[in-house]
Image (cartoon, rainbow, N blue to C red):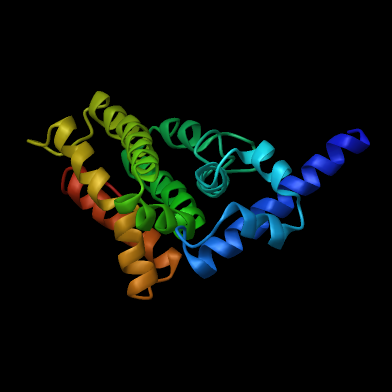
Length: 208
């Protein structure tokens, strides 16, 4: 890395740190690019060059926090999806999925709430929120599709219904309600996910 690249990296990190702090302190609407520039001590032109807009800043922070693509789950460097879908046992599949979901939801909770609060008054934020929802739905659908292919879903439960159950339960809204509002620990939330998903998706009497 040359000197110019190092300066750009440091500036980027400073801007992201400042933006995250300001979003949490003031909210999305009250945070301006000029305020981010002042707080980070990075010139406004550089802030715009690096991130284009305030929404670009929030999107980058969310992508980092949520680790949507290829987030390493274990020391082997496999992605969440690879580790979850590579598990043959349905119960272990759901346990791995719950662990991955806890990691993503806890990492992105604060910035996701900033985006959700901005969406009602900002069409671009609303569109970004919808895209994250679609991405979550596609990722979760891989799990229910894998269970359906193996014939692991409980009798009478269709793949679509299973996907709906997962989309409702494994959501930022439920995480925020139970962990942020009701004071559950992330570990408690994960254990509840395993129990609830197992009871909702798999046949009764499956071997432990």
